[in-house]
Length: 67
Image 1 (cartoon, rainbow, N blue to C red):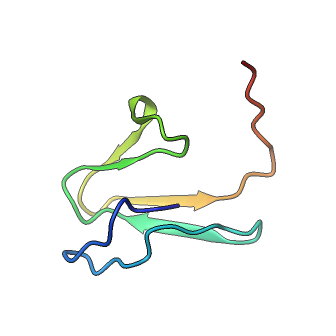
Image 2: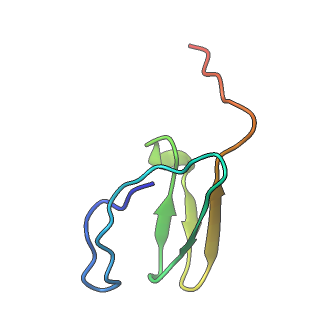
Image 3: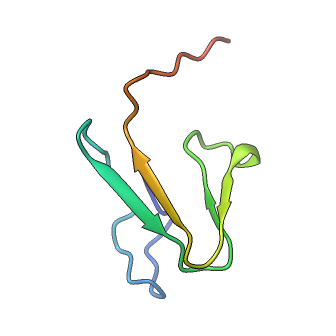
């Protein structure tokens, strides 16, 4: 999980991190449009509006990319 830069508006200073299998993270949008994506591809991003929450956790199933 990362934010592209520290945010003086929200006070965010942590810009990256990792979750262990037993951890989860809740993100609350403090902007009109927050783009959330896990693979670096913005075309399939989720868009959150002000006050919406997103919960992120490690899946029991591993994604396997076939090229």
